[in-house]
Length: 399
Image 1: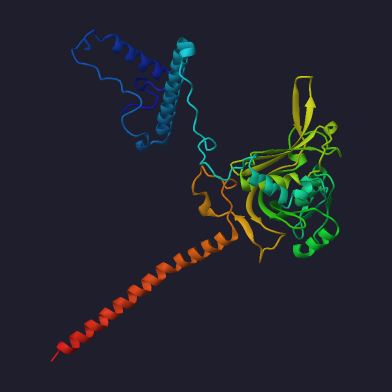
Image 2: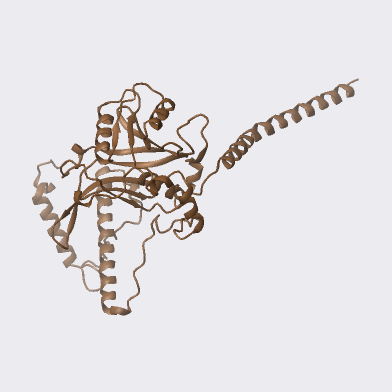
C-alpha cells in the first residue's frame, strides 16, 4: 500500500505535471486511424454538457464545478450567437429585418375601454361637473391639512413635516385622538380643501388617506418604499417656498383620470419657475411613484435634475364617494384579489365598479358560498331517507 508521501503516488503539483505529461504522450501515440501503437482505440473524451442531469451528482463540490462549467458554456454560446447575428445584420445593411420588440407587461396589456379620450364630450362634461371643477375653474385655492394616525412616531412626523415643505399652503396638525368624522367638519369650517392622513404600522408609514373637501371623493393608498431626505444619496439643499410644477404621467383611464385630478388639486395654479422645483406622480403598472426634484441648468442646451426628497410609492386600495366614512361610505372602486388575475390588466385601468354592481357581486358571492353546504346537506338527507326505507323493507321481509 503506497503512502501519502510516496513518489509513486505523485501527490501535489509534481504529480499533476507528471499526469499531464503522460496524457500528452498517450495522445501523441495515437495514430491517424484513431488507434494506439498497441492497436487499441483510446477512450473518447466526454462531451460537455454531460448527458446526465447535474443535480444527480452527489458530491457538492463536483456538482458546483459542473454547474459553473455549464453556465460558462451557455454564456459563450449566447455571445457567439449575438456576434454572428450582428455580423449578418451589418452585411445586410438597410435590408436587415427590424429587431424584434421584447414582450413586457406594458406592451402586452389588455385593451381597456375606459381609456379617456381628451376630445370626448362626455369626459369634458364630467370634468366640468365633478368635485374638482371649482379648483380647475380657479374659484378656490388649495389649502391642505396634514395629520397622522394616533400616537405617531418620529419617522411619520418627519414625513409630514417634509410633505408640508413640498405642498404649498399646507399645515401639519397632530391628531390628538380625534376621529376623522370630527376632524372633517372642522376642516370644512376653516376652508381647508384637502385632508391628508398618514397611517403607520410598527413605526413605519404604510398608508395614506386623501380626502377632497367638502364633497369628496376619498382615496385610500398603500404606502411603501418611504425615503426621507437624509436617506437619499446626493440630495440637494432643502426646497424653497416657491410653488413647484406638477407632472402627472400615465393617468389615462377614467379611474386614473380622477386620481390624477385629485393629485393636481393639491398644488396651486401658476407655478413659480424661478424656483426650478417639480413634483412628479408617475403611474406605472398601477404603482404611483412620487419624486421631488430641482432642475439644474448646466448650459443653454443641457439640463439635469437633483432629487430633494422625500420619496415614496403609492398603490390605490379604494376610491370612495364623499368624505371619509368607513361604515356607510359608497365606494366607486375597491381593490380585490380576483380583479388582478390577469397580469396584463392594471387596476387603475380597470373599469369603474358602481355601488349597485358591488352590492350585486357581494350577494352573488354570498349565494355561491352557500351553494356547496346546501348541496351536501341535501345529499345527506337523501342518504338518510334511503337508509330508512331499506330498513323498513328488511323488517317487513323478516318472518
